[in-house]
Image (cartoon, rainbow over the protein chains, first blue to last red):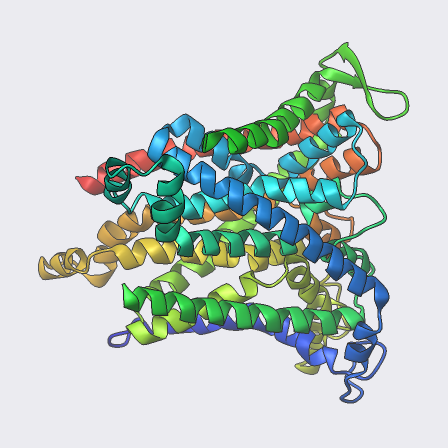
Length: 259
Length: 275
């Protein structure tokens, strides 16, 4: 930033970073408090982390979330990649695009009540299965978005050459198209996985009472105010996202440099 | 062949469910929950009764306030990031994104820890002698707005940053060369050209704020009710699905109307900026 006069921009930037990090930092600091109240610092301890790992409900919730996320991601990645290829190579249409992207654009509450009504109407029992379907619905849209943006950068001449040389569409897809969009497919899969793990509103409406996902379990605890175990859990989740974002940024930089 | 499975899936699990629940808006609630398929417009008249109208208006107000504050913070920050030297820029962007990839409930919960009467902010206020006794910061309208700004701020910063960073340096320089003051250059060149980012950012904050029921519940403590809470309650507590669907439809119609307004306004602005 050149010269003075723009000093307030610095203030805004530093102020914003403080605004973003002070609340989280408060949680992390209190997670190491040995006292029950979580708010008055009594002394340092890892007590709440210990209780966290001894809590079977949280373990189950995490397992439920991972089950849903894996199922939804596998489905969204396969179907979403095929959709993206179809939309870019065979049927360019803004109406179809909008139709496919709808679950990513619609307010989540709308999709949530729609799916609740639909599953009930079908008589499907609500549980992890219905949550997985629901998460696959919006995951697919995000995979399409990511893969499509890569596909439109490729001009399709390699695919044409492959078919001119006698390869069928299936061979062309597997040996030409898929390898050239593989990084985007992986990025789309990671996005679908992360979004599913984190998703609360749709899961809250389409899940039954017996198998809460991690966000639902967190919600049912934080409703009653400050809970020391949740401070510890929050700190761990924060650590996971720091590692994930930094790794993602480093990987992105590397691919950019190779290009 | 490629499109078949995906289109069928989207039709069955997105289009049909949304249309199904929207069709409920013109039906009666069943006596024991469920839906009675008798045509009626009662749900709509009920939604505009004073009690519910008040919630709709206050939801719009809260979402608008959150969007305005996020813009006031986000614009200078995005502008500052765009002016940073290259190697600092990506670091700061990562710092902006990290909270956003942290669980939404956890980020909301952090404000309970912060604003609680026994919380850190109260400690600070009392310690500095700014207030005599601990005050209720949590479970207020202000807490809801602060929480919404906090959880969605990165969604405001990133699109504005993208549009400011894309601005060619030549234009502001040309403006300065032609004698435009720094302020005039900003108002007449930089800001109009960054408007698409501003509009996108505002939509990204406003839309999820309006339908939110978690932040009002956790930080508003049931005292600040938004339209999302009403929809949730109709579906999961009162079991009046037709009425819940009607409220959701009204919310979506409001959003679509805003989009239409926004596209008209931004087209006019871009024409003026192009002149």
